[in-house]
Image (cartoon, rainbow over all chains, first blue to last red; front, top):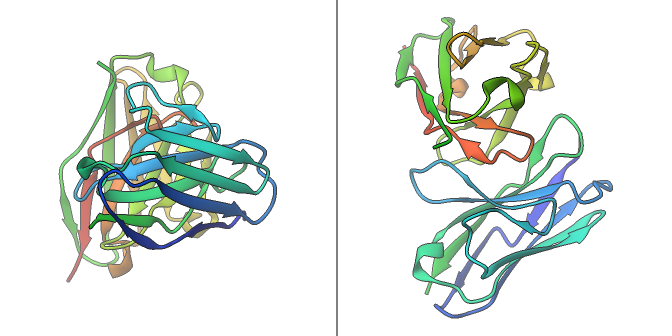
Length: 107
Length: 115
C-alpha cells in the first residue's frame, strides 16, 4: 500500500497569511494526487485534483503543486472560512490512501 | 444538479449487518465509479472500495475483504454498501463519493455499533 504523510498535523495562522501544507507519498504516484477540505460536521469537498488542477467553483487562492512523491497545497491568503481539516489522497493505485489530515485554525 | 443522497442513520448491535444506500441524480449513473469512504469519530478518512455501476465490478480494501459487499441497482440509480459482522470500531460516518477524484460526495450516514 502507498503511505501518504502530511505535515504539519495542525497549524494556526492569521487571516491573510500564506499557508502551505505538504504531502509525501511512500512511492512515486506521478500526478495522481488530490486535495480535500473538510469542515466540521460536513462531508469532504474536492479542492485540487491531478496535483494542480483547481476544481470548478473553488477560489483561486487555493493551489496545488508537485509530482512524483512530494506535493504541496497552498492557500495564498487565509480566510476565516478556511477553518477546516485538509486531506491529501492518492488515486494512483488501490487501495486509495489518504494522508492523516492537517487541521487549520485561525489565530 | 449533481448529487448523491444517502440513507439515514443506523444503530446496530455487534455482529449484525448494515446496508447503506447512495442515490445518484443529475448525471449518468453508469458513467462514473462510486467509492465508499468512512470516518470514525475524531479520525481521518479511510477508503473502503469502489464499484463500477456500469458492470457491477468491485474492488475492496484488504481491511474489509470478506465483510463488505458493494452492489448497485441501475434501474433506480442507487448504490449500496453492505457491511457485515459489525464491531464497535465500525462506528463511523460512511460516505459514498463519485469518480476517481471523489468530486461529489454524499452527505454521510452515521452507523453506530453498540450493545
